Amino acid sequence: QVRVVESGGGSVQAGRSLRLSCAVSGFTYSNYCMGWFRQAPGKEREGVVGIYTNGGNRYWADSVKGRFTISQEGAENTLYLQMNRLKPEDTAMYYCAAADCVEAVGLDRVEYDYWGQGTQVTVSS
Image (tube, rainbow, N blue to C red; front, side):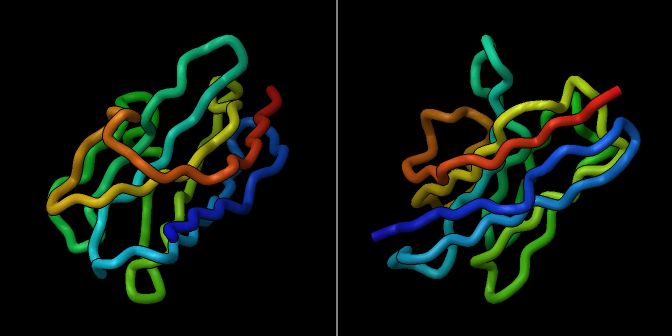
């Protein structure tokens, strides 16, 4: 069975950086979709970035473009979200998600089948 596990959240001051990790296991095929989402209290869960592990388009939320980057390691089964120049509005529970796919499916959460438990990011001003 597919398993998605996030780690790396924490509390930082505005302007600092954090790196989140997402480890995925159990997929039948070697390539699949992965994404990061976040949900602030009282708000809808929103997509941060969505990719296909074998390349192709990467979909980014406008609110994080130029500040957040992603990288893959370990035969594409670990995805890192590097978050730079953090702002208080980045405060949220961050979730990693994965899906069976043949190309990136973007930032629509309904496209993702497997979810991690979430990791909290808190940015103070």
